[in-house]
Amino acid sequence: DCVRIFWSVAVGGALGCVSRYYLTAFIQQRAGPSFPLGTLLINITGSFLLGFIMRYALQSGAVSAETRMLLTSGFCGGYTTFSTYSYETAMMLDDGEYGRAALYVGSSVVLALAGTLLGFAAANRLLALRQGA
Image (cartoon, rainbow, N blue to C red):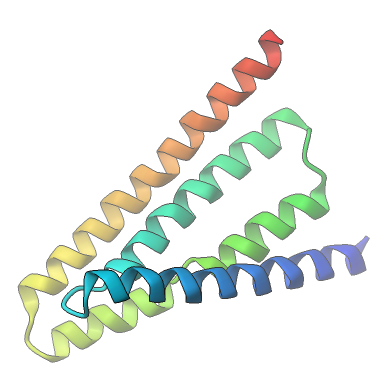
């Protein structure tokens, strides 16, 4: 049903945005302003969550379409921050901080991909446990 999918994405997106805001602020307050560690960690954990949820949901059949949309397009879509990542990278480049920008781009891409693969592995482990139970 389109209406249920709509509200699932909307509610998930709101929860993801609020989670991103507070978690990023929490991390940056502790890490300091010299490197966008909060955004980096959000992208890594968001990639992990999306990888886990999609692998588990699509292979187990235990997650409804509405719940899957709430968690993926909704929550993960609101939670991950690649638009912020792009802006922060552009600002580093604009400020002539090429080394920091390269470190940020490289670590974001590699670690976010690793997060997705770890999400797959965690979902595969849970699926194996469910089948063995």
